[in-house]
Length: 547
Image (cartoon, helix red, strand yellow):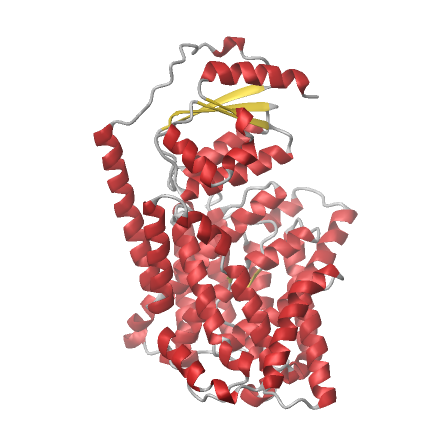
């Protein structure tokens, strides 16, 4: 049990926290709370539920995830990735169905954690993650066009093509005031950081535009038009449950659990690289599970780790779970005092914020980079992306995983039949003449999504105790996008610690993939040698010049 569930918050009782760090955590928590305010409202509205449900989710789930989570800096709450799923569940099963699905998803996540599935979810191939993330971004963007243009459409079709046909057939009814507000919101959200980085652009846009709309009496639709008053109180809610019908919620619950698990662990991995820490994946899954079991009873929706808010936390000095707790209390105070004014926010302003969110989610740079890679990765990427946009996210993930497995097996079969190993001509296997400060690590076999994380962690641990690390790659027949992504993150962390990386014996096919991904530029082509003897000689020359 101790190995499975060890919340990072309780580590604070074992080690002292300085006053300076406490102040930084409190400041970071306040900033993240302000960032989360417009996003929580926007995500709730886009998911087909009332605005306060987003705030409640950020408050309750954010608090639980910070207290029980396996990451020091994870910020939990509603996220853009859930919009598509939650909207579909509300449409089909109603609010009670959403509550039941979220609670069941929490149970699944908790079970995943206790079964140590946290170590398995991180093996999802990178092209699959980019594919469905980019697909979700496109779907979110497409759902916001109605409010962005101020169109008066009572019922939007759920299908992607039909939705856009409806937009085009109603384009003449565009409300120019709404369109102008959407554009101004996007511009403020994106460019306000050039003026100030202390206050988030989305918050500035919401406050400024809402005030302007009310003072100038601009004729645009607001939150009040759709939802009426926004309550500023909490109340326990219990869904109507028919035990004989529970089975119909298993599929949506599993979808929430899988997506929430992957996104929370992805966020934790990203933050690990930013603060030089290692999260506890199974603990994180259990925390996410408890949060999703509890939050619906207070009127909230599904929650997970939010990558953008977690990154904002780190950038503003947050280093302990205290920042996440302060973020929750900041939102609680805002809700209790100012919730009644949130009804005045124009829907087109929320659309502008969500359009920026969808752009940031799109990962278009990674998308293009993978398209330049191997045909196997391209197939996984495009299949997952197209299925997410035109069919269903659940089906996209399922088919993506199956495709990844099948293509990997084919690739391994091709390698074994062709025997393409190119044995290095080195005869020097005695490392006794290696100077102090130089470490050597050899990767044997294919470097792909299942082994990339483990290799990267080992190399990083060895490298941080060295001045130079030589990575031997003579027996690496291929690398995939996930491996390249993990290696790139690992190399950046080592380079920040002034550790030099030298590669030896890289096969031609692997070298081409490294060049396509920009790895040769990152490492420096002069630090990539075709044999170990040359690499060792180069490292000896380098170490003399290092302080």
